[in-house]
Image (tube, rainbow, N blue to C red):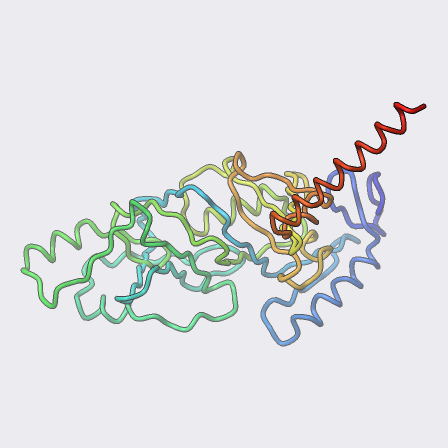
Length: 299
């Protein structure tokens, strides 16, 4: 990797670093071999000598605070699917292209039969069209009740009047604040020229989240516990390729900018040890320190 401005034979990793194009293409080949036959494979092309890679980027939710959805969207609809007995509900999106959500007219006149069919879970495909946001029932704003078998006409009309829609999913405006389940994964279609801030904005727009992108950050979280924050000038898709295709080894997480914390490798290697083991390490370090002090005292 080079620290200066990249020529045509290099691809920028950030505003100050670059990688050889041939090296990145080799890593891309490995990435696509790992995801062979799946929509996670990435495509590449060249424009005026510049290499551009595009495809789906998986991002895991790692939020500790609730996020706010738009209360009303004149073009989209939202379906809140929930099965009695399950501890969470899902927000699913309709087909979208290039990170943009297909606009649909809201359907406020959906009848009970239509609602019932929407309430059933559907198999999720492995592409950008069907990401999920999971809302746990423990959230204070998530109030879900079983529908009675029949409603009075006036009550049904009142419920429809308070129902709003986003991205093909119905939800009540009073329950528009929630926390996605930690570790659940969504994806967005991006390219290698999009910066961290642009990817964040795209993801939040996709789910019609009202919070500002400046409230969040993207982190590379390793299996070892090491955690590195992606800078605003970095390119998440290229970072994904550089860290390899296996998400068991490294994942990209969306976290709060003020709550997320970087964990260096030197610290991460001790995270998975039990407390008794860590205590023994501390004791040995203390003993070694005392021996060194004794040696210095004798001298």
